[in-house]
Image (cartoon, rainbow, N blue to C red):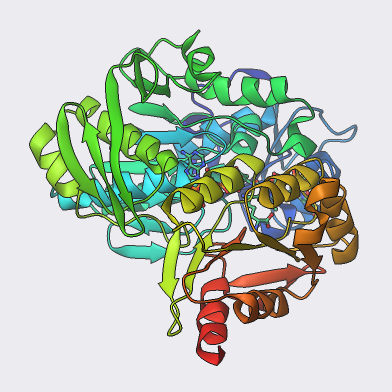
Length: 485
Ligand SMILES: CC(=O)N[C@H]1[C@@H](OP(=O)(O)OP(=O)(O)OC[C@H]2O[C@@H](n3ccc(=O)[nH]c3=O)[C@H](O)[C@@H]2O)O[C@H](CO)[C@@H](O)[C@@H]1O[C@H](C)C(=O)N[C@@H](C)C(=O)N[C@H](CCC(=O)O)C(=O)O
Ligand SMILES: Nc1ncnc2c1ncn2[C@@H]1O[C@H](COP(=O)(O)OP(=O)(O)OP(=O)(O)O)[C@@H](O)[C@H]1O
Ligand SMILES: N[C@H](CCC[C@H](N)C(=O)O)C(=O)O
Ligand SMILES: [Mg+2]
């Protein structure tokens, strides 16, 4: 229970109809979850408009309505608050409702097309090793100290997010590391949060179904840094074409990391193997358990953030060398026959290229790379031909298959991918819509020493077909197929 006036703190209110001196039992932006004395926030969405459900929310017991447009007929027993931007108001009111938990710990956000889960997870593991209590909000799962909480989104909605942050505060967490997706920035899921730092990994092709243009996508990511205050740090990738754009208008301390460009934090890959690599990091040699040039950037971002959070260099490097990456990212399995399997969450053209380049740099000369790859349904269609082209250009064989078709026809997604295959690459490719069969076929083709990349689903334990989720685990299916070899 909380006083409405306290919940509205920091929200510019345009008009109030009704009594402001009321107490609110819960916050809701979904009329289906409204209870007695709920405050219902009407948000304009991508599918429908929350304003259409105001009557439904009142019938279900809402006593306060926060909206952009007031209904034509208002009721005496309900308080109406009109604001210009309910998505922003939802973020701020959720923070207020949960006592502004982001101010009671040090919250670090990670944004970028690829690498968010890896960087946030490594930071969480690092700070636990350094002796702190910490929380994690990520695509794979959320963590409140040791307790694992299932994740539904990369960045939760503002109410779930602040509730989790409050649990972290209650569990004595000093830090929280979270992924900040571009959807979350545009939808203001992070409005009202107080960040101690922001990290930018990179920006390449993804989510153009939602952002429409690449410029809009860049702008979305930049908005996160524009919102940081002067007590925070903004750590960006100096080697990314848009790395400096992120820092243009931020009030935060600007810091950079890079391998090629001048930067505050520098690294170089000295040696690479399937089980790790040797880095020259900020003047010291360190062995890490992650593989690939892209992971050198991730480690560097983690190292830079730890130093900016006032941790000691030697302790950070020692701890870093003992940490494994996030589940389903470059996860390697060797079959009894000696075939190497790599399960990876690469679901953008850049990620597929990075992972395949890493594999090609590690493989012996005569061994083949077989890639199994699909693209998700109800997501950016323009990345499909590009992902297929990258896979074909960097593999000896490609089996095109389904990812999560969601509500789309799997064969149509496969055709969209096939359109990107260059004429001289067609002989390398065949398509099998059933992902399990595609993985089995790759195992059937592979000879000892060959490498199979199963890309796109990483840690996911399901396959979503026609809005239904079926049990599905790339790694387990690969292990089973290896045992049948
Ligand atoms: C495209 C997108 O991001 N959609 C998210 C968005 O929903 P929406 O805007 O489409 O909502 P809507 O269905 O139009 O409804 C509008 C409003 O009416 C309300 N409503 C609706 C029906 C009703 O009966 N009563 C009612 O009150 C809804 O609660 C909502 O407030 O807001 C919802 C609540 O927060 C999210 O659950 C939903 O995520 C959907 C499920 C989703 O798949 N999102 C993905 C794309 C996403 O967010 N991904 C990013 C990661 C991307 C990445 O970086 O790789 C993430 O952070 O997870
Ligand atoms: N720094 C990086 N640069 C480019 N590619 C990367 C980088 N880090 C990871 N990848 C690739 O991208 C995939 C996804 O990595 P990760 O899960 O860390 O990214 P993410 O940003 O959290 O993705 P999502 O948007 O789905 O949450 C990895 O499996 C790997 O193939
Ligand atoms: N966060 C990403 C995950 C993509 C994972 C891939 N397996 C897919 O389903 O497209 C998204 O929602 O676009
Ligand atoms: Mg992620």
